[in-house]
Length: 278
Length: 187
Ligand SMILES: C[S@@+](CC[C@H](N)C(=O)[O-])C[C@H]1O[C@@H](n2cnc3c(N)ncnc32)[C@H](O)[C@@H]1O
Image 1 (tube, chains in turn green, blue):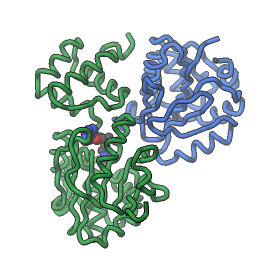
Image 2 (image 1 turned 135 degrees about the vertical axis):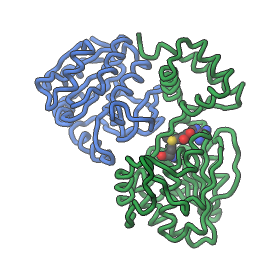
Image 3 (image 1 turned 60 degrees about the horizontal axis):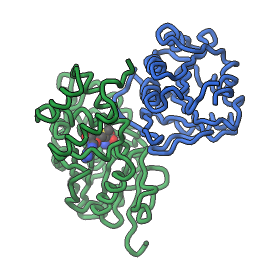
């Protein structure tokens, strides 16, 4: 039996429609290849036996729907992922923003928070944390609860410490957390400038003006039209001369906002031009 | 002649040398895309595409997400992402859990491509030290595609192709010097 026989393409569309009608979650602009793979994975994980039962459960059991959202979105993340990116933040972007009296940062699609804590560490080392505020949002409330706790597997710390050093960090990485059984608990001080909230990039609106927006490895799950729509949302939420950072494989090229943005050489970071520069 | 709308080559330890031998012998009017999924260290992407590019007159490019898949082009999957294929013949990148301790995983791409290209797909598995790709080959066969592996005797690390032969009932077992001819005759 081909591995995908359990759910066919039409049934994927049926589920997308159900979920939109019954819960208002709009997955119509998501890349189908990934969505289907996640659906099949969930179907298998939960030992579902038929599509009809799977569909019924998603549509009628709101607890199961919560699990559905958790499982079909991809939540994998790391601290200081792509060290070169954090190096550029540390050396090029944040020093510029450091001249402002107050720095508002939006981290969209923050997942379990590894990126948020990495950002707070860099801000602290540049002596900017006290005047910064990081709004960290995600569609999935469960990952946000985790993020707010600031506890990550201790087993990951060796890798994260290497990433941190490669990103230009010079402190002893272990000075930022205390080991608690199998978990590394990050300092409460880092948390003081974080605000966690659910926000759906597909359906929710702009909620503030920022000097820096990071949204990494989220747009890869969207089709081109939805990508453009979300980039427009970021554009509406970014001050002139503010910065927009995407994942290493994502781009503003081809999108309607691209002409208002100038890319920083090598990294996937763009600066919004001021009106005079247009 | 086997109709081929896409060729996917998967490989791990010991495959780069094979590609270095195969690429220069490929005809430059290949009528389908060639997609290469290689296990490797993070952050070595541009280096790899550069090396492969120096061995062929065909265009070698690192995949950009949502890019159209074109014939006659060799695509390299970026490190640390899985590659999926969309129905409209564009690429999607995915940062989900590793599969077989690997990202990119060869299984993931073989399986995704099988769904899209079904019996017009050819997948080739080269040298390597784990079994990533083997389940993918099984799926490809189920969809009527053709499967081939490097002859384990000629592989620097025989485990991966040997596992495929054991478990996936592969169509072809090819010595290194036979691979280019095999590809050149697909159409
Ligand atoms: C692969 S993770 C990226 C985490 C982190 N930014 C990184 O690059 O390591 C993708 C995240 O996007 C979130 N996401 C998916 N769809 C979303 C949406 N419509 N609105 C907000 N977040 C979304 C998922 O819940 C998940 O946490």
